[in-house]
Image 1 (cartoon, rainbow, N blue to C red):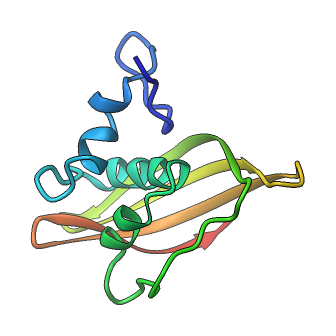
Image 2 (tube, rainbow, N blue to C red):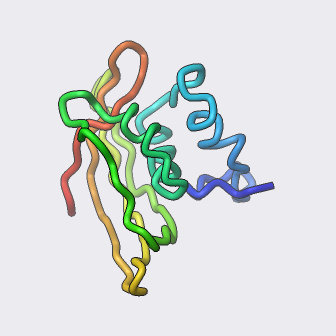
Length: 132
């Protein structure tokens, strides 16, 4: 078993296996979309951990998607905490989270964001976020 980087737990408070969690969205992208904004946000965190620019760009809303995505060499992701998942309506949601990382120089960083998501064509997309 390989614990999913997103840190999602099962009902017994045990880490979910990558293949039963975010792996089904990242590795089978196109066939298995994330069912809600929180799942998409968690899978995007996992994509950052695994440096999957293809998945990140594909799940970024076209109105805000960058042309390319570069990863900082030596960055180590340390964990994710979902603080709130708030559906706004059937096709809009917000997720507040804290992601922790350590850069190549060993400095710790904490990203606290409230992200907005939109569902179009049956798929959730990351729209943008506000740092907290």
